[in-house]
Image (cartoon, rainbow, N blue to C red; front, side):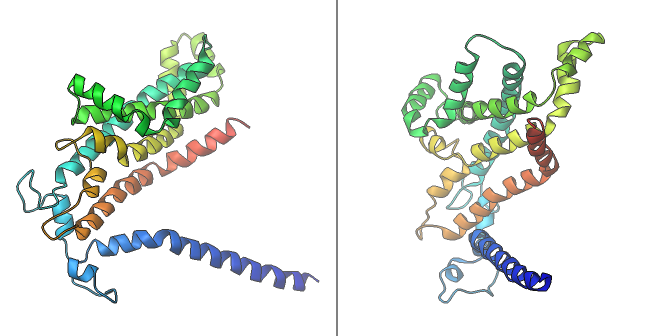
Length: 289
Protein backbone atom coordinates (compact mmCIF):
# COMPACT_ATOMS: atom_id res chain seq x y z
CA UNK A 1 0.00 0.00 0.00
CA UNK A 2 2.78 2.41 0.97
CA UNK A 3 4.69 1.35 -2.15
CA UNK A 4 1.74 2.32 -4.38
CA UNK A 5 1.39 5.71 -2.63
CA UNK A 6 5.09 6.44 -3.22
CA UNK A 7 4.63 5.74 -6.93
CA UNK A 8 1.65 8.10 -7.00
CA UNK A 9 3.50 10.95 -5.25
CA UNK A 10 6.69 10.76 -7.28
CA UNK A 11 5.17 11.60 -10.70
CA UNK A 12 3.28 14.53 -9.16
CA UNK A 13 6.51 15.86 -7.68
CA UNK A 14 8.30 15.67 -11.01
CA UNK A 15 5.41 17.45 -12.73
CA UNK A 16 5.62 20.29 -10.20
CA UNK A 17 9.39 20.54 -10.68
CA UNK A 18 8.98 20.60 -14.46
CA UNK A 19 6.37 23.36 -14.21
CA UNK A 20 8.64 25.41 -11.94
CA UNK A 21 11.58 25.01 -14.31
CA UNK A 22 9.41 26.02 -17.27
CA UNK A 23 8.19 29.07 -15.36
CA UNK A 24 11.79 30.01 -14.48
CA UNK A 25 12.80 29.82 -18.15
CA UNK A 26 9.73 31.83 -19.12
CA UNK A 27 10.50 34.54 -16.52
CA UNK A 28 14.28 34.70 -16.93
CA UNK A 29 14.32 34.16 -20.68
CA UNK A 30 13.81 37.84 -21.61
CA UNK A 31 16.54 38.91 -19.18
CA UNK A 32 18.95 36.35 -20.61
CA UNK A 33 18.09 37.48 -24.15
CA UNK A 34 18.61 41.12 -23.10
CA UNK A 35 22.07 40.40 -21.69
CA UNK A 36 23.16 38.40 -24.74
CA UNK A 37 21.86 41.05 -27.15
CA UNK A 38 23.72 43.83 -25.32
CA UNK A 39 27.02 42.31 -26.49
CA UNK A 40 25.98 41.95 -30.14
CA UNK A 41 26.63 44.31 -33.01
CA UNK A 42 23.70 45.68 -34.96
CA UNK A 43 24.27 43.17 -37.76
CA UNK A 44 24.43 40.20 -35.37
CA UNK A 45 21.40 41.45 -33.48
CA UNK A 46 19.15 41.20 -36.56
CA UNK A 47 20.77 38.10 -38.05
CA UNK A 48 18.42 35.29 -39.09
CA UNK A 49 18.65 32.65 -37.79
CA UNK A 50 19.81 34.18 -34.46
CA UNK A 51 23.54 33.90 -33.77
CA UNK A 52 24.62 32.22 -30.54
CA UNK A 53 28.32 32.54 -31.39
CA UNK A 54 29.39 36.08 -32.27
CA UNK A 55 32.11 38.67 -31.80
CA UNK A 56 31.55 40.70 -28.63
CA UNK A 57 30.68 44.33 -29.32
CA UNK A 58 30.97 46.76 -26.37
CA UNK A 59 29.88 49.88 -28.23
CA UNK A 60 26.54 49.91 -26.41
CA UNK A 61 28.17 49.97 -22.97
CA UNK A 62 30.70 52.55 -24.18
CA UNK A 63 27.85 54.89 -25.08
CA UNK A 64 26.08 54.28 -21.77
CA UNK A 65 29.17 55.16 -19.71
CA UNK A 66 30.42 57.85 -22.08
CA UNK A 67 33.67 56.06 -23.00
CA UNK A 68 35.58 57.55 -25.91
CA UNK A 69 33.41 60.63 -26.29
CA UNK A 70 33.34 64.14 -24.92
CA UNK A 71 31.09 64.92 -21.98
CA UNK A 72 27.54 65.63 -23.11
CA UNK A 73 28.13 63.87 -26.45
CA UNK A 74 28.64 60.31 -25.27
CA UNK A 75 28.03 58.98 -28.79
CA UNK A 76 24.79 59.31 -30.76
CA UNK A 77 22.87 57.74 -27.90
CA UNK A 78 24.32 59.99 -25.14
CA UNK A 79 23.12 58.36 -21.92
CA UNK A 80 26.11 58.87 -19.62
CA UNK A 81 24.58 61.95 -18.00
CA UNK A 82 21.18 60.25 -17.84
CA UNK A 83 22.71 57.35 -15.92
CA UNK A 84 24.30 59.77 -13.46
CA UNK A 85 20.96 61.55 -13.04
CA UNK A 86 19.21 58.25 -12.28
CA UNK A 87 21.79 57.31 -9.66
CA UNK A 88 21.64 60.67 -7.88
CA UNK A 89 17.85 61.06 -7.99
CA UNK A 90 17.12 57.47 -6.89
CA UNK A 91 19.71 57.41 -4.09
CA UNK A 92 18.93 60.80 -2.57
CA UNK A 93 15.17 60.40 -3.06
CA UNK A 94 15.20 56.97 -1.39
CA UNK A 95 17.28 58.14 1.58
CA UNK A 96 15.04 61.13 2.27
CA UNK A 97 11.80 59.21 1.72
CA UNK A 98 12.90 56.44 4.11
CA UNK A 99 14.07 59.00 6.67
CA UNK A 100 10.77 60.89 6.62
CA UNK A 101 8.76 57.66 6.43
CA UNK A 102 10.57 56.24 9.46
CA UNK A 103 9.80 59.33 11.53
CA UNK A 104 6.20 59.41 10.32
CA UNK A 105 5.72 55.69 10.94
CA UNK A 106 7.06 56.00 14.48
CA UNK A 107 4.80 58.94 15.31
CA UNK A 108 1.72 57.17 13.90
CA UNK A 109 2.61 53.98 15.79
CA UNK A 110 3.34 55.51 19.19
CA UNK A 111 1.07 58.56 19.41
CA UNK A 112 -2.69 59.01 19.16
CA UNK A 113 -3.74 62.35 17.73
CA UNK A 114 -6.87 63.85 16.25
CA UNK A 115 -7.43 62.86 12.62
CA UNK A 116 -4.82 60.09 12.74
CA UNK A 117 -6.90 57.73 10.60
CA UNK A 118 -7.62 60.43 8.03
CA UNK A 119 -3.95 61.35 7.93
CA UNK A 120 -2.89 57.74 7.31
CA UNK A 121 -5.50 57.37 4.57
CA UNK A 122 -4.36 60.60 2.93
CA UNK A 123 -0.73 59.49 3.05
CA UNK A 124 -1.60 56.14 1.48
CA UNK A 125 -3.82 57.75 -1.16
CA UNK A 126 -0.75 59.42 -2.67
CA UNK A 127 0.20 55.96 -3.96
CA UNK A 128 -3.28 55.35 -5.39
CA UNK A 129 -3.27 58.53 -7.48
CA UNK A 130 -2.28 57.90 -11.11
CA UNK A 131 0.68 60.08 -12.17
CA UNK A 132 -1.20 61.51 -15.15
CA UNK A 133 -3.69 63.14 -12.75
CA UNK A 134 -1.05 65.43 -11.22
CA UNK A 135 1.48 65.78 -14.03
CA UNK A 136 0.12 69.15 -15.18
CA UNK A 137 0.10 70.47 -11.61
CA UNK A 138 3.70 69.39 -11.02
CA UNK A 139 4.78 70.82 -14.35
CA UNK A 140 3.25 74.24 -13.66
CA UNK A 141 4.47 74.34 -10.05
CA UNK A 142 8.04 73.35 -10.93
CA UNK A 143 8.11 75.86 -13.79
CA UNK A 144 7.13 78.65 -11.38
CA UNK A 145 9.68 77.55 -8.77
CA UNK A 146 12.51 77.07 -11.26
CA UNK A 147 12.69 73.32 -10.59
CA UNK A 148 11.76 72.15 -14.08
CA UNK A 149 14.43 69.98 -15.71
CA UNK A 150 16.48 69.78 -12.48
CA UNK A 151 17.63 66.88 -10.33
CA UNK A 152 16.20 68.66 -7.29
CA UNK A 153 12.73 68.60 -8.82
CA UNK A 154 12.93 64.87 -9.57
CA UNK A 155 14.24 64.18 -6.05
CA UNK A 156 11.20 66.01 -4.63
CA UNK A 157 8.92 63.91 -6.85
CA UNK A 158 10.61 60.72 -5.62
CA UNK A 159 10.10 61.82 -2.01
CA UNK A 160 6.43 62.76 -2.52
CA UNK A 161 5.73 59.47 -4.32
CA UNK A 162 7.42 57.20 -1.77
CA UNK A 163 7.04 58.85 1.63
CA UNK A 164 3.47 57.58 2.03
CA UNK A 165 4.46 53.99 1.28
CA UNK A 166 7.46 54.28 3.60
CA UNK A 167 5.28 55.65 6.41
CA UNK A 168 2.79 52.80 6.18
CA UNK A 169 5.42 50.08 6.01
CA UNK A 170 7.44 51.49 8.90
CA UNK A 171 4.32 51.96 11.03
CA UNK A 172 3.67 48.23 10.73
CA UNK A 173 7.19 47.40 11.92
CA UNK A 174 7.06 49.87 14.81
CA UNK A 175 3.73 48.35 15.86
CA UNK A 176 5.60 45.06 16.28
CA UNK A 177 8.00 46.60 18.82
CA UNK A 178 6.53 46.62 22.36
CA UNK A 179 6.04 50.09 23.82
CA UNK A 180 7.57 48.80 27.03
CA UNK A 181 10.99 49.14 25.37
CA UNK A 182 10.80 52.92 25.55
CA UNK A 183 9.14 52.88 28.97
CA UNK A 184 11.92 50.77 30.49
CA UNK A 185 14.53 53.09 28.99
CA UNK A 186 12.78 56.15 30.42
CA UNK A 187 12.50 54.53 33.85
CA UNK A 188 16.27 54.02 33.76
CA UNK A 189 16.83 57.73 33.08
CA UNK A 190 17.19 57.71 29.29
CA UNK A 191 15.30 60.08 27.03
CA UNK A 192 12.71 58.96 24.51
CA UNK A 193 15.02 60.08 21.70
CA UNK A 194 17.79 57.85 23.07
CA UNK A 195 15.40 54.90 23.24
CA UNK A 196 14.24 55.55 19.69
CA UNK A 197 17.74 55.78 18.20
CA UNK A 198 19.60 53.12 20.18
CA UNK A 199 16.86 50.62 21.08
CA UNK A 200 13.92 50.81 18.67
CA UNK A 201 15.68 51.55 15.37
CA UNK A 202 18.07 48.56 15.64
CA UNK A 203 15.03 46.32 16.15
CA UNK A 204 13.40 47.50 12.90
CA UNK A 205 16.49 47.76 10.69
CA UNK A 206 15.11 44.93 8.58
CA UNK A 207 11.99 46.98 7.95
CA UNK A 208 14.09 50.00 7.03
CA UNK A 209 16.02 47.88 4.52
CA UNK A 210 12.80 46.49 3.03
CA UNK A 211 11.31 49.97 2.78
CA UNK A 212 14.46 51.31 1.14
CA UNK A 213 14.34 48.49 -1.39
CA UNK A 214 10.77 49.24 -2.48
CA UNK A 215 11.37 53.01 -2.59
CA UNK A 216 14.54 52.56 -4.62
CA UNK A 217 12.78 50.41 -7.20
CA UNK A 218 9.99 52.96 -7.66
CA UNK A 219 12.44 55.87 -7.91
CA UNK A 220 14.85 54.02 -10.22
CA UNK A 221 12.11 52.95 -12.65
CA UNK A 222 10.17 56.23 -12.59
CA UNK A 223 9.24 57.26 -16.12
CA UNK A 224 6.01 59.29 -16.25
CA UNK A 225 7.15 62.27 -14.15
CA UNK A 226 10.71 62.23 -15.49
CA UNK A 227 9.52 62.26 -19.10
CA UNK A 228 7.30 65.34 -18.57
CA UNK A 229 9.31 67.34 -16.02
CA UNK A 230 12.65 67.08 -17.82
CA UNK A 231 13.85 68.16 -21.25
CA UNK A 232 17.64 67.86 -21.47
CA UNK A 233 19.76 68.34 -18.34
CA UNK A 234 17.89 66.11 -15.85
CA UNK A 235 16.68 63.29 -18.08
CA UNK A 236 16.99 59.90 -16.38
CA UNK A 237 18.02 56.63 -17.97
CA UNK A 238 14.48 55.21 -18.51
CA UNK A 239 13.49 58.39 -20.34
CA UNK A 240 16.66 58.40 -22.41
CA UNK A 241 16.08 54.79 -23.45
CA UNK A 242 12.61 55.61 -24.76
CA UNK A 243 14.12 58.19 -27.14
CA UNK A 244 17.06 56.13 -28.35
CA UNK A 245 17.71 56.96 -31.97
CA UNK A 246 20.71 57.72 -34.13
CA UNK A 247 21.75 58.19 -37.74
CA UNK A 248 20.85 54.57 -38.53
CA UNK A 249 17.50 54.57 -36.74
CA UNK A 250 16.70 53.06 -33.37
CA UNK A 251 19.93 52.11 -31.58
CA UNK A 252 18.88 48.66 -30.37
CA UNK A 253 22.36 47.63 -29.18
CA UNK A 254 22.58 50.67 -26.93
CA UNK A 255 19.03 50.06 -25.70
CA UNK A 256 19.97 46.52 -24.66
CA UNK A 257 23.10 47.76 -22.88
CA UNK A 258 21.16 50.46 -21.06
CA UNK A 259 18.54 47.87 -20.06
CA UNK A 260 21.22 45.71 -18.46
CA UNK A 261 22.61 48.75 -16.65
CA UNK A 262 19.10 49.50 -15.35
CA UNK A 263 18.72 45.98 -13.95
CA UNK A 264 22.13 45.59 -12.29
CA UNK A 265 21.84 48.29 -9.56
CA UNK A 266 18.57 46.80 -8.34
CA UNK A 267 20.09 43.31 -8.20
CA UNK A 268 23.18 44.56 -6.36
CA UNK A 269 21.12 46.64 -3.93
CA UNK A 270 18.83 43.75 -3.00
CA UNK A 271 21.79 41.40 -2.72
CA UNK A 272 23.42 43.74 -0.18
CA UNK A 273 20.27 44.03 1.93
CA UNK A 274 19.08 40.43 1.49
CA UNK A 275 19.66 39.45 5.16
CA UNK A 276 17.98 42.56 6.51
CA UNK A 277 15.17 42.15 3.98
CA UNK A 278 14.43 38.58 5.09
CA UNK A 279 14.60 39.58 8.74
CA UNK A 280 12.30 42.51 8.10
CA UNK A 281 9.67 40.41 6.36
CA UNK A 282 9.67 37.74 9.10
CA UNK A 283 9.72 40.39 11.83
CA UNK A 284 6.61 41.97 10.42
CA UNK A 285 4.85 38.59 10.53
CA UNK A 286 6.06 37.67 13.99
CA UNK A 287 5.24 41.10 15.33
CA UNK A 288 1.55 40.53 14.58
CA UNK A 289 1.34 36.93 15.75
